[in-house]
Length: 487
Image (tube, rainbow, N blue to C red; front, top):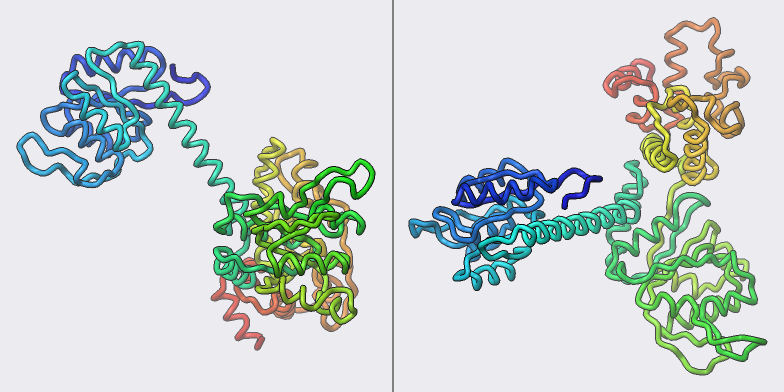
């Protein structure tokens, strides 16, 4: 029976025998399905072109286009799979009209072999005439359940791709596009990648995207924070241990064994102790680990990605990081820009996080006020994307009227502070280079316009497209102003 909690599945019944077709339709409609009847193969094909169905129930033997041809056109099977038309001519070219629909064939005793052949070509099932109505309903229900499960899996994969695929790395600024292009080149390989960037720039997200778009994506992705484990435990966590090395110790597999065949992400690699660095270097060179306290090498096949917000070369010069390990880890280096280096991505990220957290917290957000949007876009974001994400979640949670405005901003953004560019501070002192309220009082409007355009261009690093967007004018208008004021 069709589930009362979802939209009723749509079933197309195709049969030359009109009375039989309507009997099948009535028996399914009475238990909650939405049914459509076609009394010829040709009409059935037209219905398939015009509408979308979840299940197609078709007679195998029909005068014009038979059930095998219906199956071929539904699934887009090769031409050879489609039978000929009644006049002996070739069947129409299959068109994949309903690739997701489940097809059930109705057959007489003499055509069971053809029905079995059709199942090998993708039909869901077949039923022999005369029909048992109970059996018909059971098979259609199973077909709908099978379709539901396939759609859920497809949606899960889509969400995984959205979360971990390159499209989940939001940004269309030149710097982020360069990052994504590099990711697309390195992900399919087995190369080790060093991901560098400030705290909060999304290094783990990038590592997950590399894994998810690699041949190892069906295996484990294991993030390991080198700074979160004390020095005398990190070796055991990474490489495992054998029973007896200390009181009550048991055999323990380390993360290299746990994610064998997959990807190990070593976050904050710059905080790894020097003795552990030596052991890691041996693993990268030999492809073998040795459990702590053990003598037997264990082969492992692990892709190592690492990340740091520190200057590893500086650590190398200070003798705190092995130079040979640095070069082993850094086959490819990806430098993630800070959020202040890609300001034009802020509106995209803001809109994405508003949508995400509104859904997560069950809130209805109608709009983001321009005053709050400007505040978000002008802030320097020392905590990068992570800080922006937390800020938007705060705003969504505390909002009460469906409009995110300045009153919803957290305290560090609600009032001016030093992390806002000088021109954005309404209380900043007037000086020759400032675009503050005090500096503009008594100035001609043309001078005010000139100074605001100049300050905005400076703020966007000369990005005219972004400057035009912030100023609320067209790019061509901005170009004319630039010529006029000699910028």
